[in-house]
Amino acid sequence: MTQPMEAKRLNFFMDKINGNFKKKDILSLDQFDPKSLSKLFRTTDTIIRKLKRKKRLTSLSGKIIALLFFEPSSRTFGSFASAVKRLGGQTIEVQDVGRNSSVAKGESLSDTIKVFESYSDAIVIRHPEKGSAKIAAQAATTVPVINAGDGTGEHPTQAILDLYTIYQKFKRLDNLTGLIAGDLLNGRTVHSLIKGLSLYKKNALYLLSPKSLGLPTELMNNLAKKIRLVEIENETDMPTNLHFWYWTRVQKERFKNLQEYKKVKNRFIIAPELVVKKGNQHMIIMHPLPRVGEIDPRVDDDERAVYLKLQVPNGVYTRMALLTLILSRL
Ligand code: CP
Image (tube, rainbow, N blue to C red; front, side):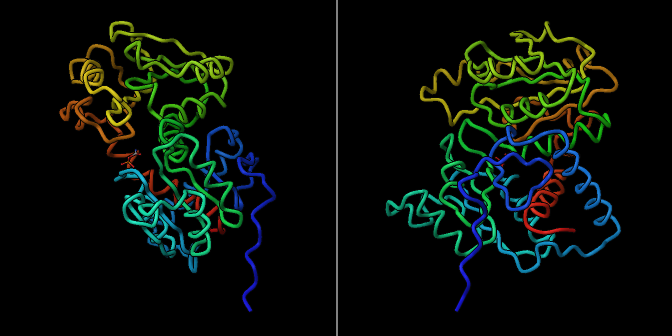
């Protein structure tokens, strides 16, 4: 007779990591502290070294990870699939879950999760509703749930790769001044990244967005207690000594009124002229991608542009590290 799966914990979803990732759900940057991020980055460094030496990695051998994506994705889906396979594991991949599973027949999110937890050792979920990853984590009593983007809420694994990219460049995550631009209202990557940067001392962020797309008020009020935030509405107000620019797409899919989207979609664009005027030699230019016109492709060849060169590959390495720490060891 098969043994029942060991419960992951007793209703402690949203556990703080506190340096121990084992079987933890990853739902929000609120769970993290600098010590846990350092551990994750050290594991990422080790994985990169091993991959460079062509070492075979087997930390997910015998494990099955369910990738349940209710919303479109290229990077998060592709990099999780790649990460699992590079670690010797296997995936159950369901894209457009709302159409390609029994959700189309009316099955609830909780029931869907309870079913897939019997088939897998961890569940990675992307869903259009803010808070959905938490609902999934409550439903899954035996396997960890990783939030791969919950509506306008958070995107913690994107923030992890973004923080790792900044750390790679500056060898620290404190005492940095950056710019975050675009759709700060709906952009879940931004919400998680600012929470991550607020864990470290002496960071400051300039927030460049149309007034209608500023950070949600509650988030702004909470974060402003932990990190210096300066809202600006014009490129002319950008300081020239920033460590990073983090540009984002205006999230068309979150707008109820398309006319409103059209009014703001191309308000802030990085072109080579802006980099010359407001950039500096040492900064990096970041974007979670996809971009839809807000970074001129002529910027791609600039050595400071890291969205394709570093952020995309780091998405695989950091997710390999995260899955290893949650489910196994190197
Ligand atoms: N950065 C990001 O989440 O990209 P995808 O939507 O393609 O996964």
